Image (cartoon, rainbow, N blue to C red; front, side, top):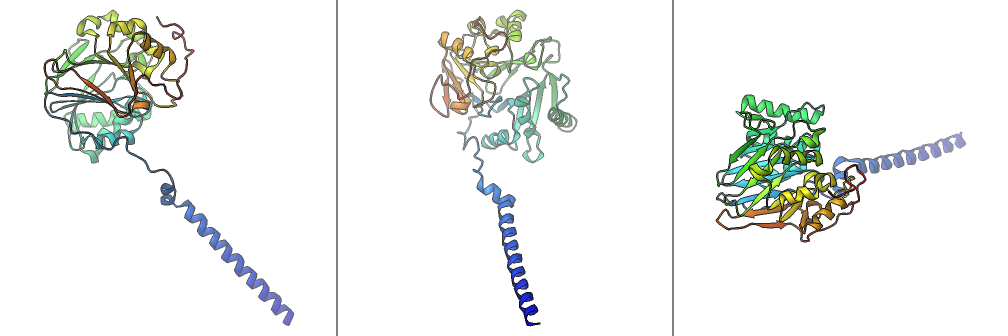
Length: 355
């Protein structure tokens, strides 16, 4: 009897130790799997910018090529007018720029989606988040059919604002809704920009990119050309359709087509544009090899320096809007003609030569 009692006591003590050990183990697992604990161990998300200098409301023209990774997003301010061209791939990243630029509870006069690729349109969804209270007056895109669910969400938001907030939704194939291939919009500080229809027979989304020419209040001080992800087929069409003559393609600054891809530039295209600077919106280690070595070779041979967002951060261009006021171009990080960690030679068709 005594032996049975002792044996039972030993079993009970052992069981108690086992239960306690299991409880301690469960607590440790629970602690390491708490959502808040996981977030605290990760490197905290850092906004892409800390702050921007207050943008003036006068004649100064300000163009910011935002560092949104592998994608495009450009913010333009002149007078009280605000324009956004593309929104990058990530709504959260683009949203932090909206915060930093003080655009919540404001009006964006014109939003342009250059073409239907996620790295250009996805961030724009943040403009329509109810909590931001952002009023959009005009939205331009080519309205081509597209199966992407995220693009459908953006379009639903746009159409909802058409019904409830007087937004005007325009097709870049007919930007002024009057049959002309170009539409000129004047900003309140005197700057102008031309929205130019894309190649109607473009073989893919890139070659359906709308082009935009920006002209400062003093046209001799600053001009800029932005053409989404246009490739060789479309950039040849730009000249053939007459954009080289009206509104003219010779500018001070070129926003590199297609993130510095070799299929977004030719020697002839660069001669037609004659830029003093090239600015490139590109993500580090992007998987595409951008900037392509062939493209950099073309820029170098023309003596045209470049800044790139993956190495230089957000790039800000400013022109005071006064006669002969010129312009400044300022990156967040110094360095010109920089290489990126993933830059490589492209083997794609049409990129073996430099034309």
